[in-house]
Image 1 (cartoon, rainbow, N blue to C red):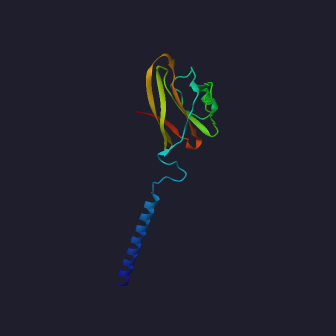
Image 2: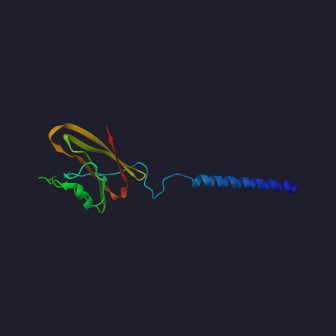
Image 3: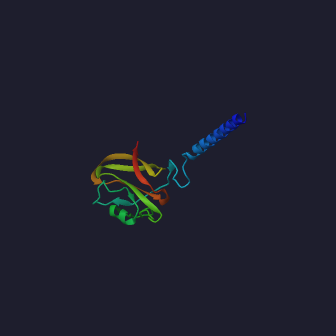
Length: 163
C-alpha cells in the first residue's frame, strides 16, 4: 500500500511541475514590446521646412529620401530666401534632427505636396501625404515636401500617397 501512495504522490508532484513549467513557458513567450523598442504605430511629430528649392542638377530619383547631414542636404536643396518676416529658410539642426523629403519629377503642372501624418511602426517611418495637382503652367517646376524629424524617431522611411 505504501508503494501505491508513493507512486500517487509522485504523479501529483510531476503534474504540478508540468503545470508550473507550462505557465512559465507561456509567460516567457509574451510578445509585448520591450521598453527599449519603439512603440508600434507611434505618432511622430514633424516640422514642415520652408524656403528651400530642389537644385537643377537633381532628378526625382535621388539615392535616399532621408538626409542625416547638412552636406547631404545641401547637395540636393538650395536656400530660397525672400523678403519679409517669413522669408528665411527654416533652420535645421542636424545634430538633433534629420530631414526626409519627397521630390516630384519636374512638371509644367502646379503640384502641391501636403503631409497628412507620420507614424513609426517598428523601425519604419510611414509618411502619408496628399498630392494636389493644379493647373498647367508656362514653366517647369520641381515640387518637394521637406520635413524635419527629431533623431529619437530614426528609422527607415516609407512615403505613401493618400487621397
